Length: 191
DNA sequence: TATTGGATCGCC
DNA sequence: GCGATCCAATAG
View 1: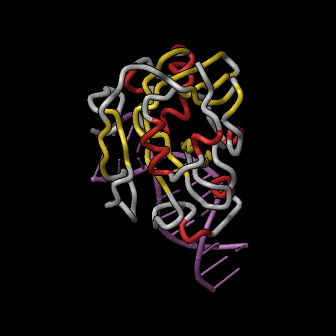
View 2: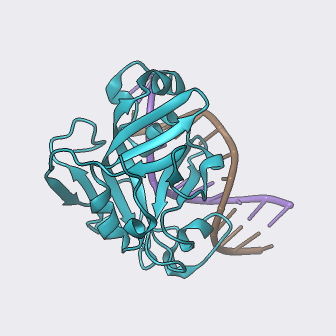
């Protein structure tokens, strides 16, 4: 399988969010390799009140969003969870795609251990859960997604139907249709 | 320096 | 439906 090149990410978040569905996220954790298919994403950009990069204001936290595409942006939320994003669009423009749900492929025992959960459907069906299952924390922030230890692979599996709808869990900008998921996939967080 | 609320999850 | 739990942003 081929690692996605940097120019894959060098497009508006909305495009990349859609293109990322079906691709394979791989993380080499201390316990071994963990992989999963991306089944749900959300796009965030600079003119979006719900985005950390809103208004183009750069802070210590959101800095990676304004960097080159194809890098990770991991942040801590609600005192207990991490969320994993992929930086998109040109260098200097603050945008990213939040990975909201995955379908576990390999390293499932590692995910179960990290999550302290047996049930397959409880491992990666939400942004906080998948970060925990894959062992993604602040150490994974602002890294290029181009090494076998931490990357996203191309995937030539069967085509899937894509649903486009409103985003989840936001105070502002909730009405924008910037969420994408694979139709009928069992691992989508909210149908 | 103090306050406040959040791109969540799991249990009640 | 609500509490856990803490960091980042904002105000002062």
